Amino acid sequence: MPPPRRIFAPTLPPGLARSESGKQVVIVGAGPVGLAAAIELANHNIATVVLDDNNQVATGSRAICWSKRSLEIFDRLHIGDRAVAKGVTWQIGRTFHGNCEIFSFDLLPEEGHKRPAFINLQQYYVEDYLLDVALASDLIDLRFCNTVTGIALREDDVLVTIETQSGPYHLSAAYLIACDGASSTVRSCLGLSFHGTTFEERFLIADIEMETPFPPERRFWFEPAFHPGQSALLHKQPDNIYRIDLQLGPTADPEHEQQHGRVRSRIEKIVGTRSFRIDWVSVYVFKCCRLENLVHERVIFAGDSAHVLSPFGARGGNSGLQDIDALCWRLAAVLKSSAPAAILNDYNSERLYAADENMTHTVRATRFMTPATPIEQIFRNQVLRLAACAPFARAWVNSGRLSTPAVYPMPDPLSGILPAVTRPGSVAADAPLADGWLMDRLRTRPTLLFIGSDGRTDPDIPAVTIQPNAFITERYLGDQPAAVYLIRPDQVIANRWLNPTVDEIARAQKAVWTHRHAE
Image 1: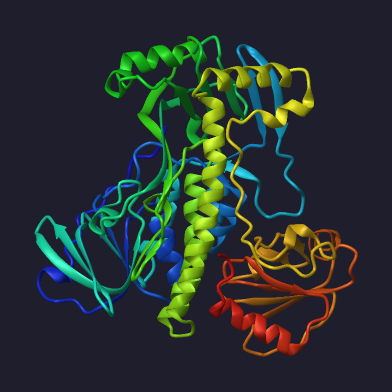
Image 2: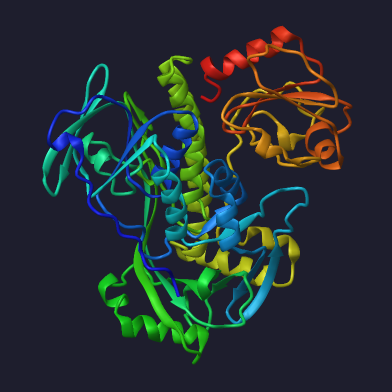
């Protein structure tokens, strides 16, 4: 049985009775992305006010599939252990055409990583865990039933108008982060529009609770007998909750499709006569679109308020967390006057690059699953038939390429000399150490990683010295006996060398705060 939804009392802020002093950061939206932003900024000793027009955690599972990168970010947000302990870890995916399994894949998680490749965990659990951390922080001011109704950009701050049950008030802040979802009020207040593709296809999501021997694996069907001519997806979640996605076609009536009897009839065709309880139902339309820019003076967009992706491949929630990962250390540096405001352009360019990459993947998956023309339909069906007997064709079957973090475009003079998996622009690869895990040593500040030799550098730059083991050698050294890596606060590799001088390191460290890496 899913847990009861936590409900919070509406917040009556001081601004109703008197003017409040200016804030460092206002965050709009208390979903996973907004809460992650508040906690990560608190990690950098930056205070935030979080405004949400609701007062309870998400209804329905919503985002459920969290990638290894998100789990590493969860560790920095102090919920990693809880998420993995509760989540369903899976690695097997099975793909069917009609009633026949045409192939399966095994994520084969590499040894030597603290976190698994993926877990399934309902969004309401993630929100619950993040709320516990946020409520315990003196740097996070959570305000429920506080609805943003106006945004005014000014030279030195942003003025926010907020409506409560007891009347309106105003807040000013140095910066505002919009994490208020696909129907963003902040985006509307600024008159901004999405650009991209809307697919006419409609899909039904249903969460059902049932006891079943189904193993924890991903099952995807093209044109199954229980749902002719369409596609279907099944995922297991904690508490014996199963997520079912059903393609409905472009002319489906959402209200009709969500009627209890109709949903139950569709599910019975999948699971048979076994007992189940419907927990949550929704109908959605695919969109793959984004803002032209994510930074608008002192207002910054992240998550679904910045870009919307079709859900296959688990790119929505995961990419939103990666937005926050790329933003918060930069914004903290600007607020502390240790970096110019122009560094926020790096956030804009990197995360637009990532959004475009994600949109490319999701558009391709959507077109494969929902062919728009007879030629696309013929191609899709021939690929499925070929994949059943020819392994090389299985790579062409696209039911959603699973989320991986973008590798930001950065120069790499050591390409071909040091391993590609840890090239600049990529997230540092985890590895076991004698006293823990490498990723746990890379937190909040740029860090120099000396591998195989002791280093000397500016004492103001944190340094970690480790000795090679099999995992470190494979991921960081290759055939080289030693190397030095500069890791950003978001655990992305900024630079690497074989034998750098102190001046080379100092220039690279300065570039982290001042140089625009991605165009």
